[in-house]
Length: 180
Ligand SMILES: Cc1cc2nc3c(=O)[nH]c(=O)nc-3n(C[C@H](O)[C@H](O)[C@H](O)COP(=O)(O)O)c2cc1C
Image 1 (tube, protein in one colour):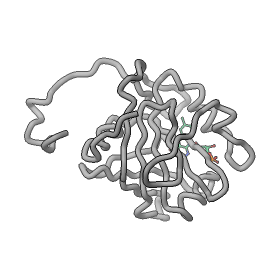
Image 2 (tube, helix red, strand yellow; image 1 turned 180 degrees about the vertical axis):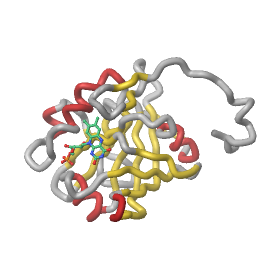
Image 3 (cartoon, helix red, strand yellow; image 1 turned 45 degrees about the vertical axis):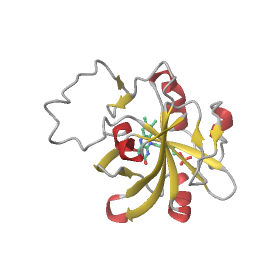
Image 4 (cartoon, helix red, strand yellow; image 1 turned 90 degrees about the horizontal axis):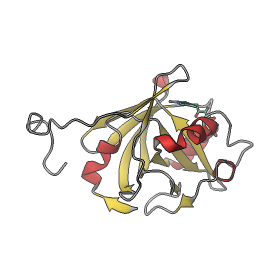
């Protein structure tokens, strides 16, 4: 993976793909699947909805860091598998044959097989709505990866795969920050 400019990290999330979130709790790595996500602004701040019902949450709350890993459609069965078992009793990196890679800033690992990874700090937890607010501190993209289509969860167990990409960059010029 090559480093991506931090100012572009939000473009990995804006389309709302299903993501994987890795954590490290001091002893071991874990991964969960998240479809409730939101880009907050152009600085690459994000929100995810999760809480104590997930094993990952304790590590998020304690260490205040994680990695958002963006899977492509060729990983869909692993993405669903990761989201239907718990790190409390399962080593998900081993079970789903994924490779943890050290990041530059946080202790949570990047996932080598994913098309992109974003190292994040937890900057707020809004308990009333189970919202965890994240700030990107480094981002990476595997530009050589052939399959780059992401998946989007409908919420009923079905998924939508990216289709055509359409260019409206000229029309959007006044809204897109310089360099994005
Ligand atoms: C497609 C999919 C999307 C999911 N989205 C979310 C989500 O947005 N928020 C959440 O808290 N859990 C979500 N889950 C459930 C967690 O990924 C699941 O509870 C997982 O087992 C948590 O792992 P952990 O206990 O090891 O942390 C999703 C699961 C799947 C399969």
